[in-house]
Image (cartoon, rainbow, N blue to C red; front, side, top):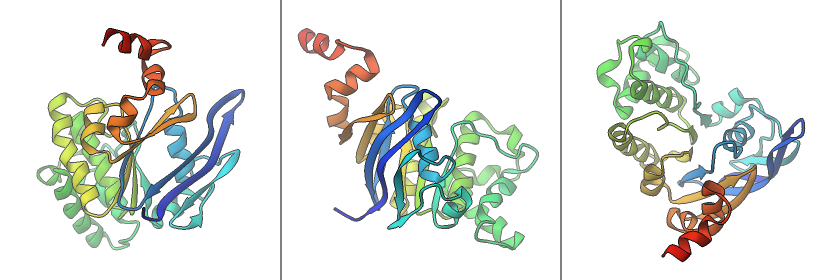
Length: 248
């Protein structure tokens, strides 16, 4: 097993009386394409915020590339290669696709011409090459999802945290996006994705972690976790696993 690129050690955070994340530990090896799944309200996006520095945990540590980055500012993490996308896509609507992607590229390319050139290369990777001069406001939902991915990719990540990059897409758009995500991972970027689209999880993920009510309840291959009784109950309710067994 490779050394973990990302390691969470007993992470917890509460908001008032709500314990959003409770004692979560996981290790993501470099080169892995992993998925974090769980029902709505499980704490997945909160966990991403803790990993990337948007939130500071009450207890526990976040280690990235061997260094303790707990609570370190997101822009510093991004400069070191830890980048995330957001579930709600908010591009700079009045700017072109090229200019939006260049915002990410500016993290390492101070000169405008170099950032714009980098934006073109990234657009090619995510299927936006023909829309570079289009205002971001004119993109479809699928186009905006690709743009969010491109802006993150332009920061040259080593670890990319994808927060529901497939949400809101129709089945054809999902099928078209799966090879894009796989291509990013094949290009050497370690990926951890929050995803509800199980078709994508089964197609893409090598390792899956399941969160429910802020706690990690299962981990393993996609096939093993989706047949785990605890996971079935978390998604479908108490007693469901037993009823499914009885029906079978």
